[in-house]
Structures are given as C-alpha cells and as structure tokens.
Image (cartoon, rainbow, N blue to C red; front, side):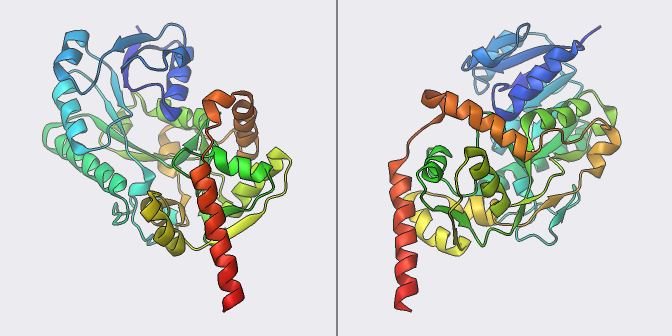
Length: 343
C-alpha cells in the first residue's frame, strides 16, 4: 500500500524537486495544497488541493477526515503559521517535516564547521529569528505531546530558474548576469574568499525524501546541503566562465554595503552579515547516517550551466531588468574609486 504525503506549497525551488522525485518513486500518493499557482510544474498524477492554508476552515473542508504519513511544510515563516499547522494536522499525520533555514545557526559563527548541534542565534536577520521561534514551538510540542516533527535546515539551494549570488537587487539575479555580459564590474561582498555551499535542488530532494517516513528522523533536526565548498570569487568566476565572459570582480566590504544599501531597501544586514558573508562548511554526517543515498551529483559547475541555459532561453520568465540596482552598483563603485584617489 502506498504511503500518503501532503505538501503545503509544493511548487517552489526546493519542493518542486521533492514532489517530482517522490512521484517518480511510485511509493507515495502525493497531495499538494496551495492556491493553484504554477500548477504546470507539478508531475502527472499529483493530487492538487486548491486552498489558502491560512484559511483553516477552508482547508479542513477540503481535507475532511484524510490522514497522512507525512505533512511537509515549505511556507511556514513565522510561529503563527506552524501553530496553525499544529491545529490542522495534530493527530492527522505520522510525521510533520518543517523547512527551517541554515541561516538560523549562530551568527557570528563560533566555528565555520556547522553541525546540527551548532547553537541557533542570529541577531542580524529577523527571518532567521522567526525560523528559530518556529523550531522552538514545534520541538516543545514534540517533547510535551509527542507531535512527530522533523526539522530540516537547507542552506543556499537553487534550480534551473535561479543563479546563486551574494549581492543582487530587489528583482533578483538577472541584472548581475547582464552586467557580466556587458563587461561591467560586479560587486562581491568582502574580499571574495569566504566559504559558501550551494546545493542543486534535485540533490537536496534525495536527502529530504530519505527522511520521509523514517522513524529515526522524528524529533530530530537535519541540515541538507552539498559537500562542495566554494569561495564567493570561485562562484562568480564559475558563472562568468559558463557565460563565456571575463569576470570583473569588485570587492566591497559587507559593512559598507550595509551602510549604503539598507537605506535603499537592500537588506544586506540580514542577507550578508546574517548569512552569506559568513564562512560556513556543513557537516552532513548525521543525515548520511540514516540516508546513505545522499550525495552531491550536480557540482556547481554543472548546475549553473543548466540554470543559465534555462534562464537565457526564457527571457520573460527569468530576465527581470533592474535599472535601479544597476545604477546603484555604478554609484557605489564610482564613489569607492573616487575615495581611492582622494586618500
């Protein structure tokens, strides 16, 4: 008999790969609960429940007395949302997997080697603090009532529609790619030597699906990342190589980016100081001990080429021009060059 999984969300960067892998396995009946957007990315045979998860009555009307072997939450960002899930699914699922974030780990980093035992604390990013609060609520319910929670902490996961970057504008990555193509300098935080990990979404799905229905995962937290470690300079150089252009890297300190970026609405305090400017290397031994199939099969050199091929072939979907950010980059670089001349 097939097991039954319900995905809250199910069409995002991470969840789409998991839904596809699970559907192809033939071992699960897959249900996706969302508002019906991006239904075109769902594989054939997936059962879609169209509802707003925030409307508890509507969700209850749709799922009725259904029970699940696993409920997978991908769009829970604040405690009130996981509290809602607890009300909806307590007693209706054998496992509840919550997507948290590796950005929740201690900042500044006590050690660049990160394990699931690393303290959770991030004074620089509200997003991360909210994720920590969600984890604390769920683990309290596990300890006191046996609510069958599993915590998953992704780091920087990408797919064919996303090019991973450190510094970009409000409209995403494309303007930076465009600057590379035009031979313009691109801003990289710090001196480009800090260590980072990028994970292709289909690789992530291997680790995640291995936790589903796994009794050893109940009441535990797991990070799921690639084992490949790159500096930010290497990341940008790999992108430029895939584009067939020269990388003109322009290094700017994180503190300077914060001071001149936050007032324009670029949250570099959270996204850089609270995340991407910090050296991290993830130790995935805990995950691999119970999911032995987990390994990196798509290196960044391959993954970014897959992504660029898709992005360049889908201009309307993926190429959002951002002249405001482009002009901001030029002003920052010009100001720093002038400072060099006057000192």
